Image 1: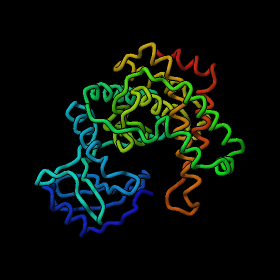
Image 2: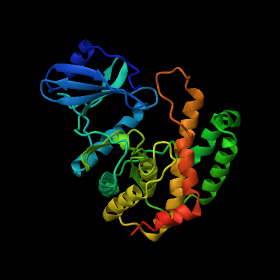
Image 3: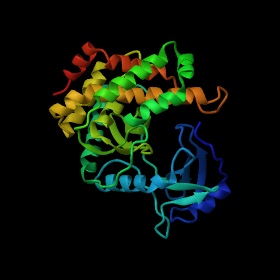
Length: 324
């Protein structure tokens, strides 16, 4: 559940009065997501998302997100805009917390993506990367390679092994491997860093929106492809790899952003890094979220299984053979 701060119609009506968007017609909390409180807002003129930024989002990062989405929108990418009020302000306060009114985009998120949908998503990711080539602002990746080992230590060996026997040794061995092999010669740019299926809106096989940029940061550009590939190309539990979805996604992306030899060589490392990142954050949440909390804990082993797949040389060889 992702409504941590409750709002009433009177509060939202007063909030909307700052804008030229009509009067409130309906208000509904949105259950998806884990970072912020989100509400679907319908007015007499249009529909919007009202987002309240909770403790896990640093308000100092919001100008970066605003500038990023503005840049992408102006470049023709399908992303939601932050709405400005009558005085040109896009950042507000409601219930004592920072909040924004965000453009609503049509479309639904898929749970079992098809190859055609994966191809469209790969193309949209490539288009986004092209558009960000001249974006100059930066934001550090707080969940990058340098954060993996400290996060594992915060989980503690006892906590990790309570999730699965031997998990601590496996994770620290992977930290050793990635720290020794992480590429340092690839292009760095602003990336989404969290393009799971629930952050892509679709109508049929066509992408209508890329949303939820609150993990966006400056990172190796191809790491974004690695995150997206690991999120889209497996069953939810990580047990089944879909080669057709994989080939389609890689085709859609590389048609927009051709892959050079250095990136191709580093892709297996980046894929393993993406899996370790989500294994660790899920482990941390699993250990630190009470079992009776309203937030649904996500299975850390689903990304550990992906990690084992990408660590298998025969699987990696077949995967790289899908690249043009």
